[in-house]
Amino acid sequence: MTENKNNISCKHQWVDRYLEHLLIERGLAENSLDGYLRDLESFQLFLENRSSTIEETTSQTLLLYLTYLRSKSLKSRSLARHLSSLRGFFAFCTSRNFLKENPAVLLENPKLPKKLPEFLSTDEISLVLARPALNTKLGFRDKVMLELLYAAGMRVSELINLKIEDFDPQTGLLIIFGKGSKERLVPIHYTAQNFLNLYIKDWRPAFNPNVKNIFLNRSGNGLTRQGVWKLIKKYTLEAGIKRSISPHTFRHSFATHLLDGGADLRTVQLLLGHADISATEIYTHIQAGRLVQLHKRFHPRSIM
Image (cartoon, rainbow, N blue to C red; front, side, top):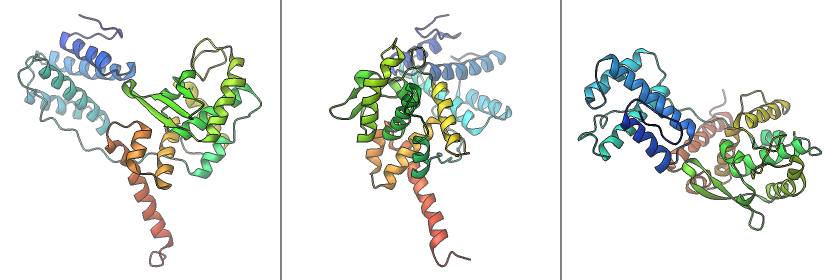
């Protein structure tokens, strides 16, 4: 059994090599590696129960595994994740000449229902942004975090990992490190710049920083994803918003409002850091759905 730098190990050396590839060459985060590991361990257990091995896997084996997964009543999204893990793994094995042929080449994902992302209206955003108290270090910190989530469309992991040197106060640009440590430059508006400057200069030192992260907890260390999630929930409830809102809702709102304002899809893709524009196109579905609702509401022939 081998073990990679992330303390993730598995029973088969090909799996270990694949996880090392994902960690070192593709820069995947630990929680993503854990997901791949669980999926591949599940497949290995299936093979062991059939007295089979990864080396003996055929397309027929994978079809039987697909049937097995369906028998466990997995939801389509979970099923798709399992199959994606297997496709990536066997493509890797083929590229490294561990296998002559890729048994997963014809393996297709189940069709997933399109779920439009939740977003806040501009009025709702304003209500949430107004909630933090600006006369305390925690309140001012929270205000700046909320402003940045909406101003830059950041993921929560990107927000909590921001360092002092990632902000250029002269240009108003943030250097954001996204998935796979991919870097992108995102401008933020003057209001967000001003709040961020004030926080870094006047409020952050009060946390007695132990790390270079911009946003700190009471102990002067970096915040966690869960910590930011709880703060979002607190302020949205105080703003009278009853829906389930997450930090990612601010990212969805950022993209939706940019498109509403006339931004082109390619620009929004770059600002969000999407590798594939198809991930950004979901926001056009939001716009289309809203247009349908407006048409039904205001067209004279739609009024019953």
